[in-house]
Length: 463
Ligand code: NAP
Image (spheres, rainbow, N blue to C red):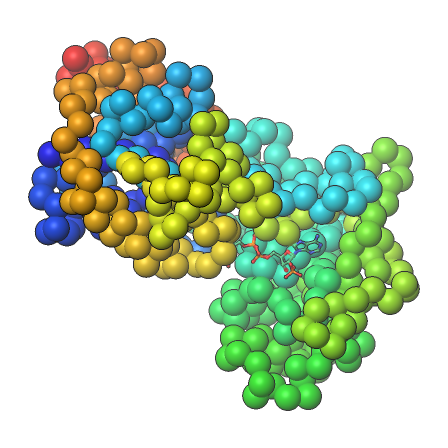
């Protein structure tokens, strides 16, 4: 039997587990999917916006993989923390696939970035997604004007959540404190600002159009911001997604505002140079006007514009975090690899693999992880066949070994107990299922399975 640990239970981890068990080349593969959190699904649970119910429902297909008898969910196990590094994992498994995503956010590297009132979009997302590591106080929504920096899908997500209105979010699994804060929010105007023109934006058109469909919200685009965009002169020369985005912003620029009290301003060709301070907190952002450099990039013009804001969300991308004991390319924020094989000093390290954002960087939609995971699984299976990875003797039960070293894994019955507790919480609040946002609450709920199963922290009957 080939025993594999997949570290991370987001889409890339689960697609990797599926690719490993749904193949015929190497018989008898068993996969433990480890996660730092007691809950599976990674960014599908903790990143996809609550109003994107269709994408959220992807959990149903990910779930079938974790319910496969050849796959085990092993939550509440922090790989990389003391005592559970790559060396130890290779003592417990024949092969390890790291699918840990990109947990940090990119920095702007400009003065004022850390002022009170300036937050990374990932902090805001983590809070409204009930991530147990998010500070419970969340992000203050007590000022009327916000600036969101960046032209990616995360920028659109946070803008939509800021302006959608709590009533429309009540039917989602948004945690109660975030729902209350959004109901009391003072935010009325959100400027989404990018350093490139609309052709250089990274958002997808479906997500862009959603802004225009927000009830009671005007989307304003200033013709002057579009004037410098060369792609308008020859739309046929740009990819279809860019062409569609251009047509949406052009339509918005031509449309007079309806006079709603909430507003999105979509701004282009403005590069942030400094966050401005007043009274010890952020008061706005100073931008430098940019323009096309004629080679597909942008250049500064030396002209500046200040946009007032009591809240700044920096949505400028994610960044991979190193795992102690694993090689790391600090420039790319990824683990060096060849077709998913981890490279140590440029040489493939048999038994160690990566998939997802830690392999290729934080780009692409959820579906992009499927071919990525397949490639990594193929490398692993080829190595298993060529190097007989399964020949190495291992302790009989890796999860028992994890427990013996002081960890308290939450297994599938524990997760099912969390799901039941979230449904019960929603019922109490007169809502559908509502997420539990605190570590203690999640672990207590998982522990309910422990009681029912007679003493095992993971509900499997103990050792
Ligand atoms: P992203 O797509 O990489 O966009 C980041 C944005 O930040 C870009 O506009 C980038 O501009 C800008 N930026 C980076 N550094 C900057 C700087 N120093 N100053 C000003 N602007 C800067 O990242 P993301 O929005 O975090 O999304 C990450 C991935 O998740 C993407 O693949 C995205 O599609 C995916 N995602 C998908 C969905 C969905 O499908 N609904 C939802 C959320 C996220 P430049 O291009 O100039 O660098």
